[in-house]
Amino acid sequence: MTSKPLLLIDVDGPLNPYAAQPERRPVGYTTHRMRPSGWTGAESSKPLRVWLNPSHGAELRALSDAYELVWATTWKDEANDWIGPHLGLPRLPYIDWPQMHGRAPGGTFWKTQYVLEYARGREFAWVDDDITDADREYADRHHLHRALLMRIDERIGLLPADFDALAHWAA
Image 1 (tube, one colour):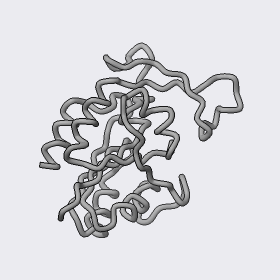
Image 2 (cartoon, helix red, strand yellow):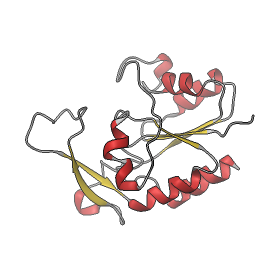
Image 3 (cartoon, one colour):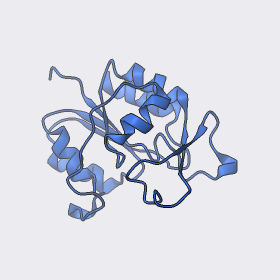
Image 4 (cartoon, one colour):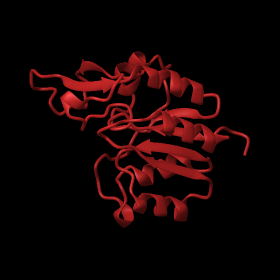
């Protein structure tokens, strides 16, 4: 295979450990207040709280030698406006979900079928906080190329060991 594998990146969970307790926010994260159009609280006066770790940008840029980086998030293209600049990332392609939060085959996460469609014919690694064994089994059965599905704890976010694992897998 001549093209680089895809690295499909979810925002909430891997980059924004939204489920961490405010007093237990992981070290290195800074707080940002955002109003993306998809934010269900957008009509309220309170913006969305997002925690981002600037070091993740450098880690992702380093992985771009081995991967084609792609947003795989409900933020879709808005990740390029709200998330990427805080991490020092260039504009990235994104998966434009045909339907969000709908029904999914075989007990899988709703994104899984669309991730496989997007990655058709390509190796890929995917980081998301909603990946389960059912998603891995579905990918094994329906994707003809190597795939790494990494579940990231939404209370912690991506860790140095996760970036190491991604680099090792791509090598």
